[in-house]
Amino acid sequence: MDHRYCHRKSYFLQVPRDILQLPVQLRDFSWKLLVPKDTLSLALVPAQKLQQDTRERICNNSFSYLMASSSSPGQDLYFGYFCTGGSIEQIQVKQNMSVTLRTFAPNFQQEVSKQGLKVSFIPHFKEEGVFTVTPDMKSKVYLRSPNWERGLPPLNSVSWNISVPSDQVACLTFVKERTGLVCQTGRAFMIVQEQKTQAEEVFSLEETLPKPSFHHHSFWVNVSNCSPVSGKQLNLLFQVSLSPRTVDLTVVLIAVVGGGAFLLFALGLIICCVKKNRKKKISKGPAVGIYNGNVNTQLPMQPKKLQKVRKDSESHVYAVIDDTIVYGHLLQDSNGSFVQPEVETYQPFQGPTGDCPPSPPPTCSRAPTAKLTPEEPPPGSSAESESEPYTFSHPKEGNESNGGTNVPLLDAHEPAASAE
Image 1 (cartoon, rainbow, N blue to C red):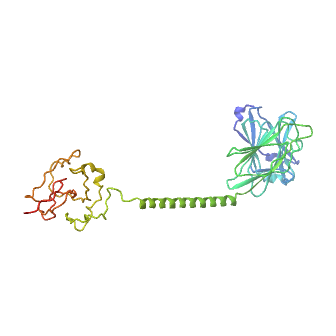
Image 2: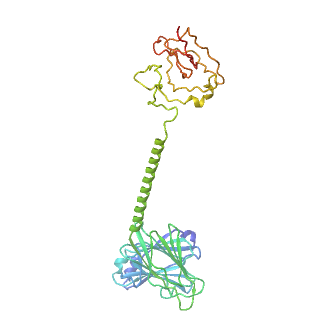
Image 3: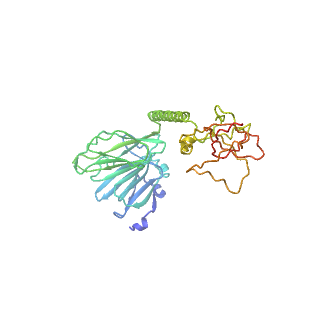
């Protein structure tokens, strides 16, 4: 009577041994389970899983359980007969309940001792009944709605929680194509909902029942009745069967073809990128200021003036920018014409170094340089024209015989006077 005392407590429904030893033969053993209204509900868990007695699968055991719920006085809801050897793991009932153990053979005492129902008091819920089902691969599971002979009571609902193993596929099939139900008020419908994805399908029970469907995850089947027309009751029978999960060949072929096409596309893209980079490298000449070991350091039609100091290496030769493009305004002579300089060579500085770096010549204007007199010809120099190119060199102590390159920076040579 006190729901706080009964909450979450469990009790076992077993026939006492003393009663079984009475000299009279007893056929039925019943338990009445009463709970506070709208406060608690009941959950029955068998020691071994149960099956529901149907025409397609009849119970052949020596005993069975008859379960009924009495939600209101004079109105009982019969869930049906259940025996061992099935797939039903738990039955939850909304209100008061009666459980009757009915025997069919004298040897039931040997089997009933191994059986039993564990009853627990759980929080109240609104549905008339909830069945927890775990199908077996060996056989099909047949399930039918309560009150099979008289139909599901008006405005009542029942649910089945069907578990599907991860490596199996469940097939839900309805035995009849139509229920024959005609509603007077309200609607009768069925909801099939996937528990993992929460995707659900709603079907009207006044129309054609759905065709067989396959489910890869555990799902719910909920049936809600309307107020039917007299003589038109709701009776629903369906089956659940398991089969190993197989990979669809169409999906495999699509995946293989898609993967091959993606690989070909990636390979073609890589080849195009490589060819494009090669074309860029071929069409593009050497960058300005980048070392080029194939530069010709010999001036055309001119005697070789600058001797190579490094005889075995060309690493000091560089390609330089044409001075006429950048410093063209500085290469004008007194008459206003441009002096065409020749390609120069870079000589590493080998003289003494001071504390301060040398200052570069001014670039804004060019001061006239002193001309060499005929009486002071530079050693090793030869007569040159005004178009003689500028040369850059640094004096080197103790090496007067290497080309005579001791010439002032940016001095234009004029032709020397002939010796008298």
